[in-house]
Length: 89
Image 1 (cartoon, rainbow, N blue to C red):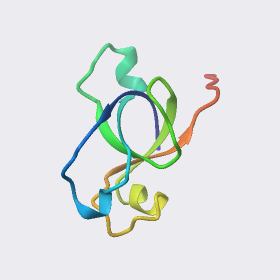
Image 2 (cartoon, one colour; image 1 turned 180 degrees about the vertical axis):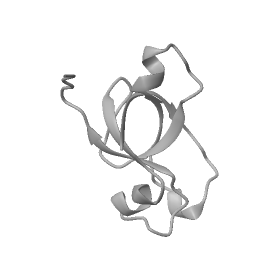
Image 3 (cartoon, one colour; image 1 turned 30 degrees about the horizontal axis):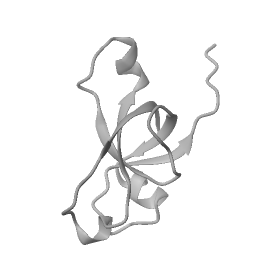
Image 4 (cartoon, helix red, strand yellow; image 1 turned 90 degrees about the vertical axis):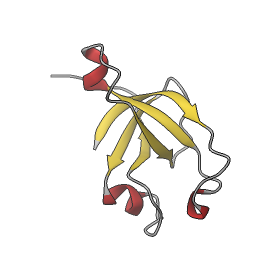
């Protein structure tokens, strides 16, 4: 699981039938934001109603499909939580 910030949206009028009705968001992982890199951005399916500018929890790989209850869908990243606060020790 990683923490990132939603930095944009993706509109795809033609996509796999199993993704119809799903919101796609662009996520920038926190570790890349600190270094000023933008190459780490990826697209994640939104499972919790997140929006641009929010900090989110993202699950990658097969856990993304399980977390969205979409086991037969072509999903590699899913937003499964909206972060309220982050405390570093």
